[in-house]
Length: 573
Image 1 (cartoon, rainbow, N blue to C red):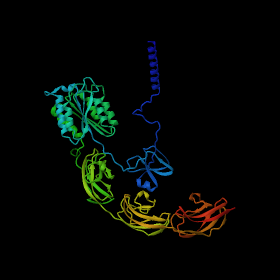
Image 2: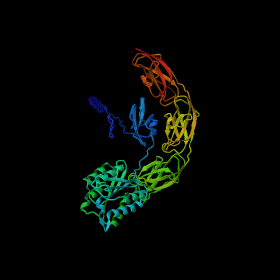
Image 3: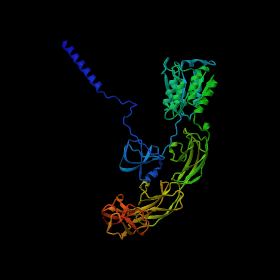
Image 4: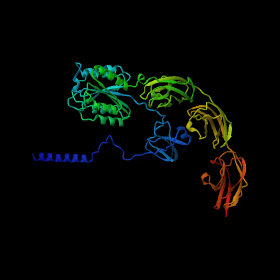
């Protein structure tokens, strides 16, 4: 027996020790509101540039939401992208972590959902004109939801399952379109029993509708006062402050004036309506009008009429006019023909916030049939008109061969629309990002442009781009080597003395003659008095020798990028 007792004691000690060890070494779960202690942020510059301009400057677009480290220079925010994006000109290193591909802006059309909250507390067994209030409410709710099939309606009830429980709140069906039958089935099952937790119900409804992220509307039908110690007025203030667009409409059924104070305040603080209903007829009219007021229908908002040209050139700016509600965040955009979803827009739209009924849209570069569509803020289409996008043509006339760094005269015909441009690309390239940073924007110009040839010999294409998206035409050409020769340079000069330099070479803007340390090919190493602009094919000018004695080179630069000739120079005392 002693052995058994001793064994049990040992076992208890072992178990206790194990539990203590586990407690001391337990890994706590990450809490839902866990926030990393180390954060990263990027302060973007205030100037705003386009994605194309960023690329043209040699920059790269990246999303600043990612944890980002880099050595480089931020030169501007990017206009028209759906991320906090910036333009980065690369330095020695450029490491982007969690980089996201840049996408065109997709403006958000806020979702419209409405939740009906039905009081099912014990007082709803009271009678109005000989009929139980709950039975009247059930009939009215079923009749109303059947008439609003296109609305996203749902149903919540409180006090229908337990007596004396302020947590007796339930979402019986979440808001969806064509939800009348489901709501009717759930309404028929309700049997009033308990308390009146209106405040907690409204809060739960708001959270279920994600009221801090999207439009959220509740319609509360009640016959009594709050019985679970929630200040409805204060609740309304907080929901209004935190919500994107939260609205509480309230219908007081068979209530005295003294009982309605809290409900009226809840509605007023959230921009909703309060309606008093004394009987079945009043409740029927009140619920119908309240649901209609919270709906997003063409019947409520009114029709929009859009006028636009029947035929438009690809990539052109199209002038449109419209009549419509012009409410905040209403939008007009270009869509594939007969499209009904906002997300199918073609990245060309205008917000109508208090605008005057006219504007311009940038037409797609793809030929075909399209619609201009007026979308209300909540996503309902209020009007549309159709148009055709037609093909456009362009021509280019350029020399077949040019010398490196020379200025090329380009004669062209084409639509010359906003953001059209002509540029030099590697032969056969069809990617805008392959451009050689030498191009001309054509917006409103007269059909002739001067574009600088590359400083490297080879085969290239001159390309006409429609709105930076579509190639209309291209012409190939060759870039050939050129030469330059300097003469009359003395072999030896005194430090700081002037000496003559004569030259023969290409007549290009940006050519220069500089003095470099012997053997250097770095433009930034220049010393002494230099000739930074040689704009004639031949000439003679004086230069100034460096102040330090030593061996140097006098160098002829093509466009400050390529050395065409060099002569030695000995600087003495």
